[in-house]
Every structure is written in structure tokens, then in C-alpha cells.
Image (cartoon, rainbow, N blue to C red; front, top):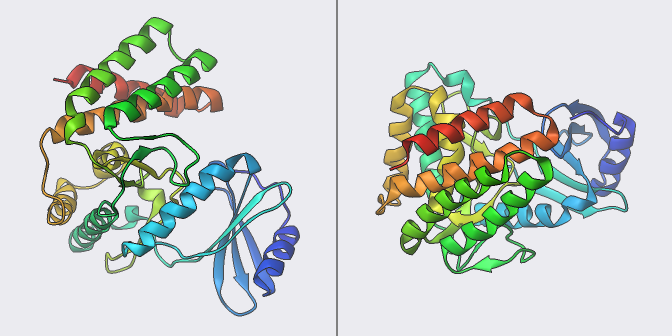
Length: 308
């Protein structure tokens, strides 16, 4: 994301709210919906400042609650230092966490195994957070549902509206896909329980130490109260395929030591995969992300073809 602020402007704002001079401000051209800056303070501490639009306030307050719950569950995250709404933007400041992209250990056997075992335990801890309703927001700003099928129906209505607004699909295709997803959701719903899901576990949101230790799970902006299978939408799509099969096995063994595999697990993962790829297409069309749109369409077609 391009910077809309100068380094001096960022230094003035952050220095003021933290009561510590900013001696270096570097724009980070990553992140959707956020303008991110890496900062070094006079005290020697480093942090990341994230600026965003006021329209994202409900989403980011929900993210803040998800972050708080993750901390309480013992999940390694970047500590939230400051959250504030200004007249024209929202500011969040997180501590800087040392670490590298998991891609740096893709060919390192023991380090990769340790990382995925750590990640499996961390996700297992996240899914141990007790929740009583399914919802797209943790701050109470969105409807809450007692059954997974009811939530899926609500979510599919939102996706249909975005598809119509972007002309992402003919209406007949939207209704066909919607019906397939709802049918599978109805079938598995009685076995689903709401849990805190990060929902965006890919390499950009994970940090690994030199020894393979998981040092942090970043960016809880997509966190919602889903069926636990919700985590596998991105894991199966964007993370596991980039690593040897043994890494998936290390993750699974660690996760299942906390949460034994439930009934209808593969079909529950299918529901999530269909929702995530179906939802990704109108979002990609709206943003002009042609490559991501193509990837979503290909994966959606594959999931539809392989469903039982």
C-alpha cells in the first residue's frame, strides 16, 4: 500500500502518543487496508504503526478483541501498544517482533518441523478459547448465530450481494454455488462449535526464529468466530502446499494432541474452502486483482468438482 503520510508526519503522531521520540520511520509497502510503518524510538525500542480508515473501526475493534483473546490463550503475538481513533484515521501500534518469513526454512528439515509443530500447538490454543456464538465480529457489531448453518446462510447472503454489485458471476451461478455450500453446511452443522479463528494463516502473517521457533502470529484483522475448520481455508490453500508433506504432518500431530479429529472433518473443511474462494472472487474483482481472481476461480472450480 502506498504511503499517504510522510515519515515526519508519522514520527510526530507516534512520538506524541507514545511520549517517546521517533528517530527512524520506514514505510512498509505491504498490507491491504493498512498503511504500515516500522519505527525506531529514542528509547531503542522498535514498533510497527498501522494507519487505516475510520470506516474500518468496527473491524479493527473486533481484531483488537481477537488479539486480546489470543494473548490470554498463550498464543505468540505482537503486543498491542496503542489503539486510537483520530478525526480522519485509526492508529494501531504493535511491538516489533524479530523473525523471518517461514519461506526461509522451507528446505530446512528440523527447523521446518519445529515451526509447524509450534504453529499446530498455537492454533490449538487459539481454538481452545470458549465462544458461545458464531459471528463475523468479536465486538458485538455483527449478528451472532447459535448454529453454523445459520451463520453460513448469513455469510452467503453477503457474498451474493457483493457478486451482484461486481458482476462477478451470472445470477444463476451464484445461486447454484450458494445452494451447494448451504447444503454441505446444513449436513455438518450439528457437529460444529464456534471458536476463535485467525482465518489468514499464510506466510506473510507468520514469523519464525533461526531455530524454527514460531515467534509470532500476526494480523488478526480477519479473525472471526467460525467452526474450527475455518483455519484450514488458508492453511490448505496458501501455506501447506509451499512446504514438504512432513510439515503438514507435524502441524496435524501437534494440533490433534489438543483437538482430536471430529466427525465429518473433511466436509467441514470443504464448506470453509468453498466460502473463502467464493468470497474471494467479488473482492478481487472490486480491487482489480486479476491474478488473485483467477486463482480463486480455479480453486473454487476444483473444490466444486471434488466434493462428495
